[in-house]
Length: 474
Image 1 (spheres, helix red, strand yellow):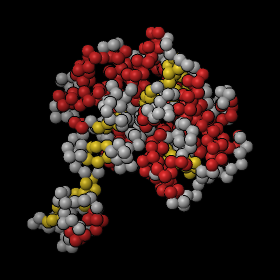
Image 2: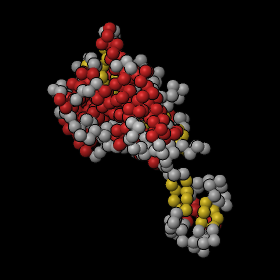
Image 3: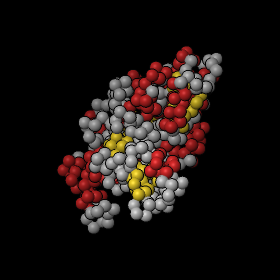
């Protein structure tokens, strides 16, 4: 039964599961030092130089599973001692160098960083090289390559550099907390902080004194996850964990589509506000465009705000594929409504920490939203929903949407808008390729996920946005 894409995800899950198990039993603090030994026993083979280093790294993973560095506002952290297996980044000469007589690489280098040995083979002096790449461009054999680490390749906003200790370093001013580096690091040396202990604490207190009710709000991309079980069994499993009830974040998406279509018609141009990584990218890289971002809260925050307005005892936990949602929940505009965020990876760890086999459970029902709210999970879904919102409210507006699939596409659209050459009046920004179904916190990533989201949407009882929001007197 395959639950994860990679073994790195599986290792992360094992740490989360063990931390959660000890937290349920109130034995976490006394057993804290033993968790790495439990996961990597003394006689187990290890990929590191020794079992002791492996356990030291696991100790860091445990720390992040318990909330990470409280002094670091970023929800993404680098485990320095685990970040030592990648080769040095930058331009280097490969064995394809033929020792030619032309020496174009030397001629084009303005820093004098290239020299030749007795065989005329080129070498690059890293102390002089400024990574301009001109030598690679002129080499007739393509013998000079730019070796980038997987995390740097994954980070399309250039927030990752390599520090003096040869470890990855994240620039918090550039980072949009999308988690692309987390998923792509082959050694699991970059991870998102977990707030799984906060959720366990909330559930335990709700069971002990009934002071509040813990709502689980699941993202519509759940339909493409937990492929080994049925969605109704996942919903039942959440209730078995101790959640008071389960609601669809897709209902919040219906609410946003309803309001955002009106806002677009009134203002004439908008960018979406649903993806927190996209909004953060605008703040950090295109601040002049901030007034064009929709004033609506995200579906997560919109529905959480509604829930808390109707139930004063409510605590809301959002469960989805997104690491950036963890950062969004800490914003002053969202903090009063969303109490915690978990990823699907963490939910799997929660199930197994309580030995809940969801495949053995009866199916429960989750039916709060319309087709249009549910398809927010994939690229283009929000645009379709805004179009539908205009139609249902009889708003006459010449809609020209631009769904941006991934942060690189977002950059191009925002750049065009900043230069007033964009032929669109609504930018749907999704930082992850594919949309939310490509989020770093997914259990599985794949092309089939889009089809599963659309099928899930077609199963919705409410067929229009208006039908869904009418139930709320919204």
